[in-house]
Image (cartoon, rainbow, N blue to C red):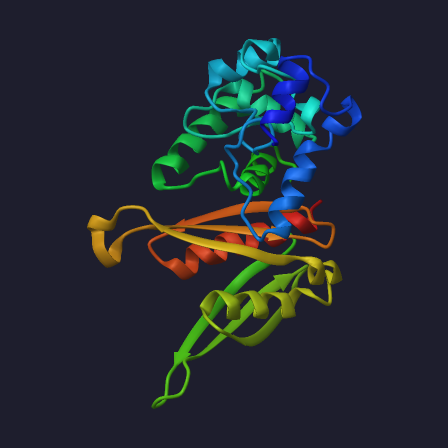
Length: 276
């Protein structure tokens, strides 16, 4: 119905819904998916997250000048929005669009653009992917523009896995961070190394940043990038986080060590929210 209704309303002129009701179609689609305990289809026509998504540099440049050249309707008609992705195919137009979205004034003649594009290409070649890790890209952009100041610095961490007899595996993380010159050492247990690291980091930060209690890790995905390398293969970790308002954001980490990749994505996730 979410594909048929806008086709009737917009394409055929048959008023199945009022214009005001039609603008709530994307929200309704996501609500139904939530009730049915289904993951929303990003590629669904009209209401999917990728329905009005653009990637290539020349493509994006044309869209910014005249969106109707690539979009069959105004996405706001169905409550959706235009998205521009950052990837190895990105051009200056992609960066300018995303910078504007993040509240950063980036001009086309800014010398940081070429440097940033080259860095993105190197990182994508190393395995990073910013399509689902836009929060990591926002931090990367702000670092390049000198608009980023780290809230805390990692001094070090240690993961201990212990299994005795037939008992469950015990995982403990010890972490040391520097917050404004103050060294803080915490330890926590978890179901796995990432869970333990997350708990230990939260313990270290909660006193200084109480809003961290409202950040939840809602999805965690690991992908082996080159399986032919066997146990030495790089892995990409994607973390999706959410807050009490239902806002979600994605971060990414890459390493030959799954714990290091997870840590990178985890820190980006927390820093992104705390810097908002």
